[in-house]
Structure formats: C-alpha cells, structure tokens
Image (cartoon, rainbow, N blue to C red; front, top):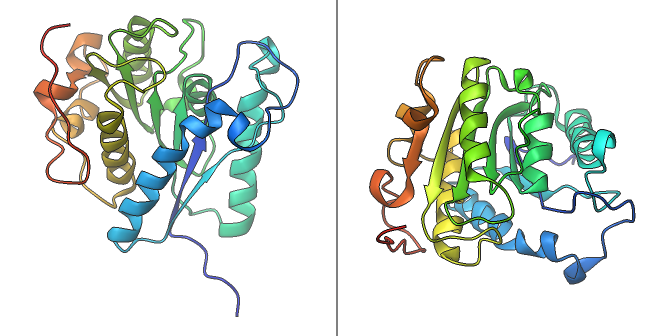
Length: 247
C-alpha cells in the first residue's frame, strides 16, 4: 500500500559560510547541521503530540557557502521544495525554518508555490536582498540583541521592507541570546516550535505574534518588533523560558 503523503512539511536549513565551494562534512562533523537537530526533534515531537502528520527534514547543501551571486543554498532549498511538490502535490503547505545563512536561503526561496511561511533564526539579511518574493507569506525572524555574527538591526529593517512588499512579518528579540543559540537554548527551541506549528495551524501562535503579523504595510519596523520575555506567552510545556532582565 502506498504511503500517505504528509499533511504539511517543515524544511530546515542550517547555517554555513559566506564562501566555500566544498561540500559540508558528513554527520556530526557538520556543526551547523548538528546545531539544528534539537529544533528538528522539538518540532517533530510537537507535531506528533498534536496528532498531525507533518514531515520535518533538513535540506542537504551541495556547498558550504553562499558564494556570492551563486547563492548555492538558495538553489538547494528550491530543489528540495520541487522534490516535495513532486512527491506530495501542489497543495502541501510548507514552512521554511532557517538559521543564519540558512535563514537567508529560506527568505530567498519563499516565493516557491508550496511555501506558506518562514521562520528565520539569527538570519543573515544583507540590505540589498530582495523581498518581493515574500508577498503573501508569513515571516517571523528571531534575533538575539547580542548577536555579533549577523545584525539584528538588519533583520528588523528586512521585516519592514517585507511588510511593504506584501508580507505579514515581524521580529522577536531574544535578550541575552547569541548567534549559535546556545545561550537560552531552551527558549530558542520552545519559541521556534511554537512559531512553526502556529504558522502551519498545528498550534497557536504565541503572544502578540498574530497581532504583529497583521500590521498594515505602513507600520514602522519597531511596531513589528516583539520582546520574547515581555510580549510572548509560550504557555506550559517541556521547556522553561526564563526572563532576562536588562540588555
């Protein structure tokens, strides 16, 4: 008997380098990929507990870096989406979950017909990157205020540009976090799971995220920026989110 296709899918895109044409190392030696494994497990567990048949899988990269105009991980993401469409059909709703370079690839690939939303963690958002492909999508970007690898200010700016282009977008700030998502790891995992399942309709969006996504295109960037500790209620669950005082 043929296996029933999933009801939805989450494609996970890990981070990488600005340049690097060699393939990523295999298995646990691929540290950016390993970093995303707890997120894969958390989202898959939440989907099972909700009784939803959601496929959660990591996208494999052919190269370690973005590599300028080549934008290699973007093409890997599109290839993975095309393969999903071939296997599961045109109506499969997909959320792209990316970290750092992977978030940049997710944002770029969001124009694919299957994509309903993007959750970007510590995203790499160069000022000149396009946003028109985000029209009609839900985009939630999560960034630490202490990130030294990618810019939270650039992330905030992109949410405003995306909103003007027709996206429903917002940003969540994780005070006291870091680019690798090691500090306050439980909060990152819990928040990400709530966002992904909420965008797929398998759960409820936390706190004021729904309100922020509904802001008009003319809203200022600061209006669509939420604080994890002050604005979001993640409710009971396996992860404890401890507020951080100050900056």
